[in-house]
Length: 376
Image (cartoon, rainbow, N blue to C red):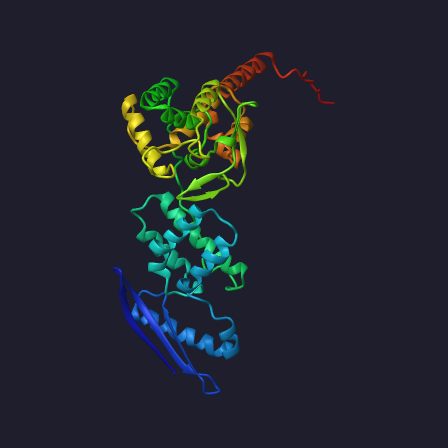
């Protein structure tokens, strides 16, 4: 029996690898190399000796049956059988793979899942201290789903660590004021009709970028005055809209008129390209947006989602109920819609009326007579 320890360095990180080797009672040799969750050579040695004792006490059959994979070994199965098999959106799968490749595998790849302890997670958080809390939370969420998937499939017997997310300050949602949006519309119309349709689909129908790209001419019902949002496209992958549900959006008169004039014989999609490329892409729409913003004299970001924020914000400012905004925008949770409702004049008026009601009640009393009870 032997437990050897060696230091390793990889991609700027260092640690200790334990090489455990012994023979089972039947003479069969067993060897295991694993990264030790310890910060010193002596700590790694002690951990390795404890690991060796646990292996021997469990016995060969139990060890071979319950061998826990490393994160590097488990990651492909997690992506294939956990994400792809459950038809998660391509963007979600790619995001998970990027987080694994860039953040998790370099640090935990050689560790068995059960060795990714609370201490290891704390070290990961420390290494990501220069990243935004949202980025760190995205990494932690993927790690947590890896643990939960492994637990569900019986790969591990219990969660090896408790994942605690960082507190994230509520983000400020930028949107265009009515006069700014009209400047944007005027600028888009000066470029060409396609740019106008693009701006109106985002700002007056609330479509996401991928939904604008994937919108087809047959999705527009001029008789009923609605747009059927049935699909979204991301990097060539066509899926259901975010949330997995199609929705209908009523058209403004201006949008309906623009879409009538946009009808063409160049393909199924509403938007088309004049440069010979087969499809409109997000990169192209970012360029369109930058050009329109520049022409309108607005801050040039190329960001498209501000159009959707503008759509929801204008509905809230017009006094639309939260449930109606949720359905038109296709928000999966009402809590997402509630972020816009502070803009609602109806909500503000109702709040002030509550103050006035409280004042009136204080002046009039609570309407109950107070009975004086004398002592016997």
